[in-house]
Image (cartoon, rainbow over all chains, first blue to last red; front, side, top):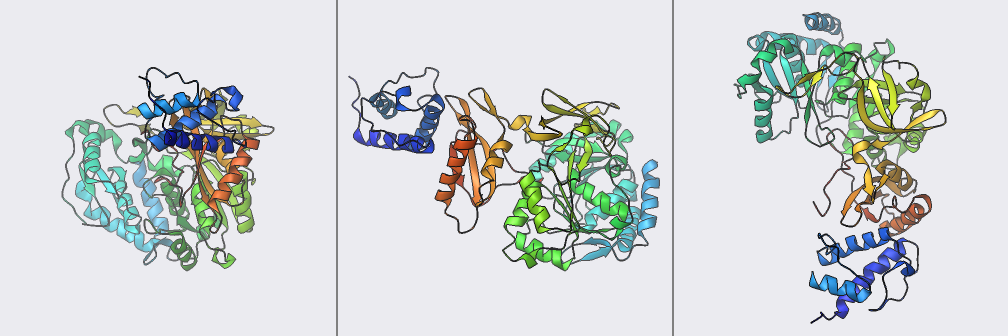
Length: 85
Length: 457
């Protein structure tokens, strides 16, 4: 059974996304569970790396620091990943 | 022994000097009295002749007298941080074959601490050797050996130096501290010794009380002296000489010092514990002239650049390094890689940082110094430290701590610095984490601490 995304998790993750966008000097776009996390969002790989470091401070864990890097396509996928970690 | 003659001549000269000497906040030893003490201690410590002695080195006139006396007796002297823990002291005694540890601040004639018999055979050839423990790039102290010839060779004896009063800002047992002492010893001028941990306001009081005219310090230490002095210009001592060393000296700092101390001669020196003094720059500009690579420097040092790294062949170099039995002696005329990276711009070479401090962001190399220079351009940033934070995705990312001007809005400063960095730096260079801190940590050598563990350990 797939894990349900919790709204509070998404809220915390979106907040960190907004920080990364502001640090780039970009107005954060609207984001929802189905937002695809690719270049169309305006973020590059280094920005995503920064996000993961920020999320580690929020959630106390880094699911990307494993031997197998998880696949994440949407914001919902990312939220479920941190919920499960 | 050559060093016997060295000290005898020096002591004879200094025994005439009564106006200058070693001074603390509360005490003062004219050189004439210091010489009497050295001679007294030499008689007292005669049974220790030729031994391997660990000398704890608090910043006191007595410490230097003990050092001189023990050296006169042909002891191999290991200079120890006064704050060494008993455990670390025990390790060093065992590793280095130290017979006894003595402490000028405590008992005059302490009993033996112990040591290893392993190193006895090598000690006969180590008479008069001074061993300094540096921090090294890995943070573990390494033993660097000098003698009084290698330590005093860079010192210039001049008439005008004989009336100077220097403030000691370095730890007295480290190479830079010994160089300042050596200068005062050879020239018979004064050295002022602050108490360990003295704050900046107290330092200024001491400078005024002891009429300090010359200060040698790291750029980080200078920034601290400038930023924490208070706003009144009358706080500033009337300096005739400012020396910078131990870290890269940037143009904004040189310009600030020139503005605050318009009468001072400003010199920045490139020296390391291992290589000794390599060159000095007196033209008020950061970096060093390209001609330093095409001819030996005033200090008789040759230099070359290989793959962006500075290599040096120096007559002032240590005589050996390491701890017996893995110890190595210094082959004459050996070229040594400094670990310092340089780049040429026009008629000048500039330091860009240490090879070991390079931050690797997804395969892109970042020099912390470059980041700090950009960040320090903000008028409300007093000091900055750029360093690596571990990243599971790209290896490392750049973080930066800032000290801001009192009263400045830290959040606004960070926002402004972030914008400047976006404009001036490449994405991989941009510090992703900016934090306002109360103070930037300095090492025992007065240098910015860049290699600190991050959250990942």
